[in-house]
Image (cartoon, rainbow, N blue to C red; front, side):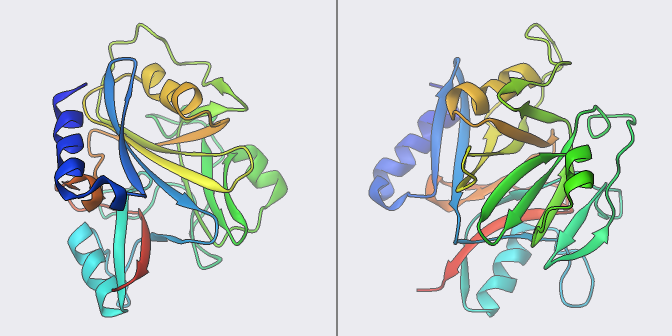
Length: 245
């Protein structure tokens, strides 16, 4: 078990593991990961701007915004790539309205490493959908964020991933269960390559489709396991909230 995973496990022991129902630590192939889950019907949303149109940017500001609405943030993480001014790269949809549009062409960087895809939050559950399929089928998503590359597509790893790759970063992403009832948000404790990270979803969690969110800047807020990461202000975020006690 990695040092970070041991520390998280100790935190759970001290604070009461029975209360930690949304997030947990996971070890896969000798690497440590944090995994947070959301179920269909729970209040999972994407967040970008506040009421004045300014980027929310940080977990602290998101917590404050939700607290003012009488809600408590259970977990949150960065949820897609963004420009220097924190505008989303590719599609971003909030409450059924597209803030930025789908990008279907190949391009530089991880986002343009096709196939890429879209994480979709619907009334009945969740989906990770390859970009061209999303364009063709036009699914009815309440919230959606485009990113790339796809990590797992129909149970297969992205064809460009190499097990021996020395491109290693802290990485985060999302996978969805085969029936769409659960979404799994994963961040690595340390630097891993794409092949290792994708296998966590396919082999460790058993999900058929998963999407990369980002690397290096990846961050997680998960007080259940003692995580409140900090860093540069973010663009899109995904968060699960519940009514305040």
